[in-house]
Length: 177
Picture (tube, rainbow, N blue to C red):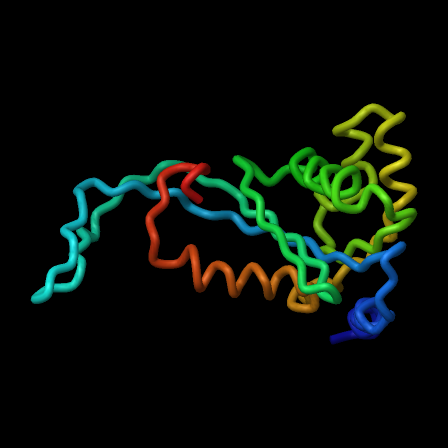
């Protein structure tokens, strides 16, 4: 840890310490790549004498990305799946939030990792300026420090969801995921 890390960490913690404000909610967003796998053989169902039997062999079916958004102070979360994890995908997910659930909010604080895809410019690369500009003006960006993504509540939500719902399961397409 250096001074820059500590300063950025404190900025994130200060955001989390703010009292709830429905006109300026604090939301957290993170994403995670996922390998898609299909079965090469049908699993054998469990019986009274044997547990479900699954062959170890699988077939790769590509990748996808899970986008997790959470509003910690109200206990709300949403996971969506996209084929990729590009600037355009990220900006599109944020725009859906800003124009949907948070359309009534004059301002939103968005906590996210400090990645090259999480930028104001991503909106201008994805949308016309007439749409990008109002979105960007309503967002207060709060970036986690480098090597401090664990400060993002959405990362913790993703971790819990992955352990409970994704790990150990073979999903061969985005719809199933």
